[in-house]
Length: 268
Image (cartoon, rainbow, N blue to C red):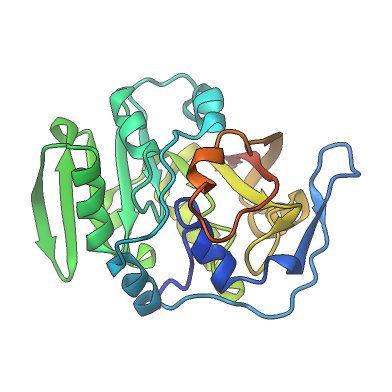
C-alpha cells in the first residue's frame, strides 16, 4: 500500500496548499497544551506520485536549521547511547540527518523521492555511494557508513531487510499521513523498534492550527500508540524567530509557528 503523506518538515508551503490547516485548532488552555479540536473536514493527502512531482520542482522552500528540540532531547531519545541506531521516516532533505550522523549515531533515513536523496547529499557536499539497489529500493551511504538514505515507500521498508532500531526521530511525519493509514504507520514504526526502543515525535503548529488529517495531541497519540507505548508530552515552544529567515521569500507566512514534542517508549 502506498504511503499517502506529506512531509511538512521542509515543505511548509506544500502543507498550506494541500492541507486545510483550519481544520484543527490547537487549544492551549490545558496544563500540557495537548488537547485540540479534532474535527476534520476531509483527508487532504498526497499520493506518492504527487509527492514525487513536488520534488521535481526547483523552487521548493527548505528548512535549514537542525531541530532545537531534537538537540535538547537527544539523550532522552537515545538513553545516553552515543552509538544508537536512529531511523528517520519520510526524511526528505532534513538537515537533522547530517547533525545526527555528525554526533556519531548510526542513522537511516527513508524517503520516497530519489531526487530528494540526491539533493540532500549535494546540498551538504557529502561524499556518498550507492551500496544496494534491488526491487526498486536504492540505498545511498555517507559518513563512512554511519548515514544511509533508503529510497523507498516507508511501508515497504521492513525489519527483515534493514533490521530494527534503537530510536525513531519523527518530525512532522505522522501528522499528515492519511487518517486511514495512521494506525498502520504506528504499528510499522513499532515493528522497526528494538524492545524498549523510543520514538521522539515532534510536530509543527501554524497559527494555532495543525496541518493534517488528525491533530497530534496527547489524546491522538494515546489512541493510536497507547497499546504499545507509554507516552510523555515533553514541551511546546515557539520557533517563529528561528524560522523567520526561511519564511522571508515564501508566498504564505504563518504569524506564529510552534513545535510540540512527545517521547514514546515501547512497552515490549
